[in-house]
Length: 163
Image 1 (cartoon, rainbow, N blue to C red):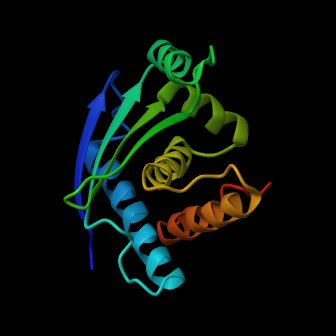
Image 2: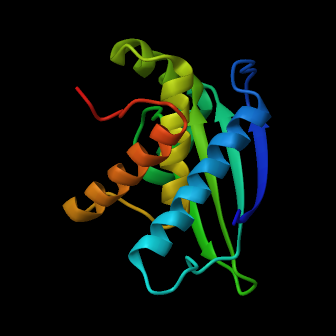
């Protein structure tokens, strides 16, 4: 079963290699992975939400830095920022995900990955955060990374945590 997804994609800069259809496919794969993970690890077959509403914004370094400073008190552009808003009374989980495209390019080059592989990974990572996953505690990080690896594997993308 596919969970209903409402996705808004905003371009703060042109990124022709990341069209809406591709981003939507990655986000849907991440949502489906969360639903599968929930069903496999819980007696309740649903993850507490019946629908997902996300906004994914692609930004330049200046906007990425401004957002990171304003919301995290860190004065640099980071690769992904996620704002989780929880689940509303109607059962819709919502959040905003911001990808800083110049940082993604730099990291992909440094890690010898394609931009698409790295962008897919950080999109999935952001969706998992928006749906309640985190990596503050070691066991939570292990669960989140394992789910990322599984989702990316289904998309034909290698384990991003392999050295």
